[in-house]
Image (cartoon, rainbow, N blue to C red; front, side, top):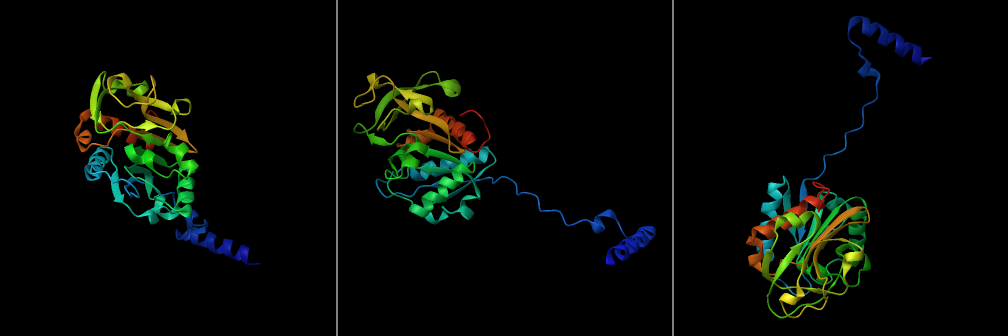
Length: 253
């Protein structure tokens, strides 16, 4: 038999110092790759296109760099396949609008979130993919309309974000949503409809929220229409908290 012959050879080599235990072990499997350190900022538009997109991308690049992350900015829907999405820790829909993904791309994104991926939606992300019910659940609530122009109001933070600012007065395009998502999400901030004209949601008007979704994490802010918002320190801190949450750097959103 060959086995005794092999053992005899190894015994002889051991005496000579030429055979070690590793010589007879199988090659170990390669270790799992490190968690990706990139995020995808997706800005494809099939509807209204916001002038603030470039400054939004620059802001997310800066915030990501603070967190040890890199941004890949694209409007290519072909990145929504299993291999490409696996390179990203989270995907940001930054003022995307309309029908931006086909059926196969939608399914790939659903699987990405189910596997633990992160989603961050900014402003018009709620004005996207109305024929995709799964996405509606992910973003939390779809856009219904907004008052004309920029409206000025106080933003009231709740929960873990309450420490960002006690009274934060902003001017931005304020969305009304098709439903109040509070029963399904953790609301992070509301706006006061008594302070401006054109609100349709009443005394409880969420403008930012987060939730665990289908195996992954989702975070959304309705603010971010006006380019000036991206220079506001409180808004930047707000976005940074969201980025930390969806990339798994923080358990709190």
